[in-house]
Image (tube, rainbow, N blue to C red):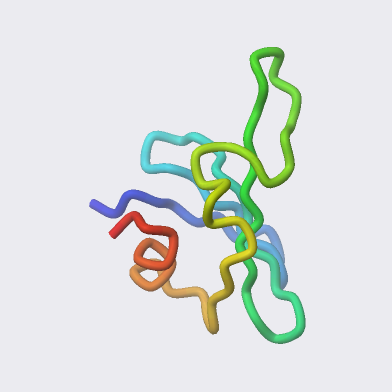
Length: 77
């Protein structure tokens, strides 16, 4: 089982979720590269852009949407 799930929103955005369903961020197609945008939440449920458990991987880029490569690039595989 992979530690991540991807949900395609449209041709330029994929939501990144943990295997358990936690929202970790998104992948956005920017200048022909997929850029990971981390996201977290505070105790009141407010969004913290660039935060969360993968904040240290915010803005990592990928050439393509490949789950194994993305897991490895985010330090999860």
